[in-house]
Length: 443
Ligand code: ATP
Image 1 (cartoon, rainbow, N blue to C red):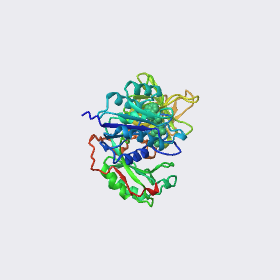
Image 2 (image 1 turned 90 degrees about the horizontal axis):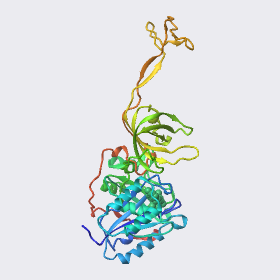
Image 3 (image 1 turned 90 degrees about the vertical axis):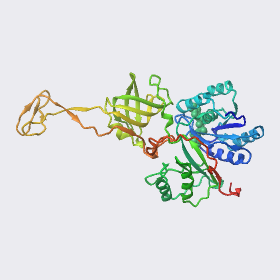
Image 4 (image 1 turned 180 degrees about the vertical axis):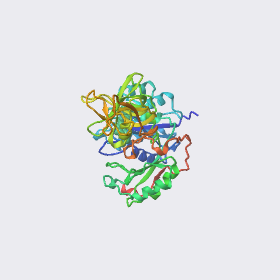
């Protein structure tokens, strides 16, 4: 279907670390457009390459899909709202793209894929917009246009949902107070909900001065709505919106990294054999190397991910698939892959040369000194050489991911392994957008 009245609106780079939030802007935009247009899909929250150096938090961008015969009238109103709700004075560079077609072209899909895996330059995006005759608006340096196209062009192979609840204006900056037991309850009751807490730490609340109160993530949209009713708090949020998202899918790691280039800031995975023994560095992080197609690349597991134990257990010759982002080189270190998962595909046998055992006493023999062979201290029997012994491996084949407190938004949690949501239908009967009260005096 090519319906000329269907428009995708992609938006990015509206916030700064001092305030605002692109998802909140999308919430306000939906509130503004509710009676003016028809929504033909869920709002999308797309996390692009998490290794871009200028991201504020999770490199999130949003898009809405609407149907309207009144576009010329609402377009300037949308632009005004984006400007009003962007933290431009603190460095935000908002970009908006209006894509006038129901079906998204392959070119946008490819652009979005590149934005998920690599670094895209501002000159590339300008060229792309002009050569594809796209309708757009930007302020500042136009950086936000990359995410705006990325959100429109993202093609889901798997998806999750996030219900994001927003704070009233006077609450922004205050501590978020939510009852931990109620968070534990929603995760127990709705098994499709993930990463809500870890041990006694709540993971649904951010910590900054932004308008997000909490975000509940899961596979089933209805469960999110029921769960949000069970969250116990004294604070009265102003409303919520549900986004369809690539969070929890690890889609940024589907890319096979070209180890001959090993480009900084790109994301993806590498299959290779361990070529340098793991060592622990000063910070307690573990560094090792793998070889793929004769290219040796360094890998690092950071302490907070708790992938350090499994990394330390690797030995030269093990075959692994490692996923993550490439950190650029500095004066002190080379380019290195920041590990986000390790999958052990094959464990090599671990042999070690050890002192021989006495065949009579069954005791380990002691070295008699340099070139002096070995001697049993009990019966004085002698032996000339060390013997080869197989050391049992203390790890198993399989996938290892960081603990939930060290997850990126995109990380696929253990709970979602083997799960793929492919139903793309938009159920407009589901209350995916809701304003709690119609008295906006608290705004
Ligand atoms: P939040 O998660 O709070 O919405 P953020 O982490 O998304 O914030 P932004 O302020 O939006 O941070 O900054 C990210 C910027 O990076 C945006 O301008 C976006 O267009 C741009 N960007 C996204 N992906 C890429 C990429 N692959 N290459 C270059 N720039 C990118």
